[in-house]
Length: 389
Image 1: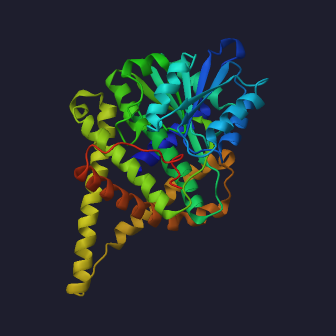
Image 2: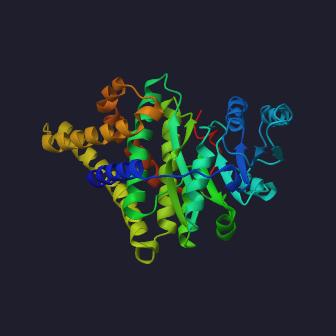
């Protein structure tokens, strides 16, 4: 799969670079509601609202949704509404019972005035042209129910933060580009920056509070209703990521479980959906099978080492893996160097990243599979905002 994603991502980046693009003018802009759900987000909310005040987009409102925070988030929302009253149209909504992000978004959508909804996390700092880029892409194709943007890590003071920076620009970004280019679909929109057509949201019934990852779930429910989801890497937002291993593992286990839930829910899509979406579902099956087989192999290696005092590793396979990853990271680095403010020393972390990515994904996938069979009805909860802090 690595060769496919590398090739697809390369051609997608080249094609997009050469493609001419005319952005919406102020006269063409539809009214947009920007939803920010929050639970205990007093540390990040001020910067997020400030970035919205600097948008190039003209016709929008901001809906701040407090999902029964236990800190001063609600008071801060009201203060921000007064502070920016002359510059931003800010609406505030307080929910008396904490029910999670999906429920908060559904409540926010009810009071929002726009026919188009942009959803960001309370730690997302948008580039000034981000909403314009999202809306231009969304309006270019009436079959698009959602368009997601490109997250870039901004907390890079720790090794874990810098490794995730590499992951977002050289793995997640490249895979989404390849999926969109090769299949016409993406596995999931990103909850930290995504624009929805209200018509599509209403048709699928809004966000589902009963799943672990509402963004993956809503993507595939849109596919079932014949809507498409697109990726627009020119719409950039800066995000915070977990800086502790425990928080990262919880986040990735949640992602992995969400993907597994979607795979099981959409299993009929393996023979009913368009071929591109079938390919994405097959990739998910392969990933879960890989995790199971790798775990079995590790147990076998440990048994062989401690009881038979013998261990054989395939050096050719390791060389191939490192070579493919080096190519992938080089492409991702070149494509994102300017916007993500990357420096050449970041590439020196690639060998460390390969080990980190392999272990994190293996542990997360096995944990997600195990938790699903132990408690298949477990509901999603707030991770504020998905940093696991």
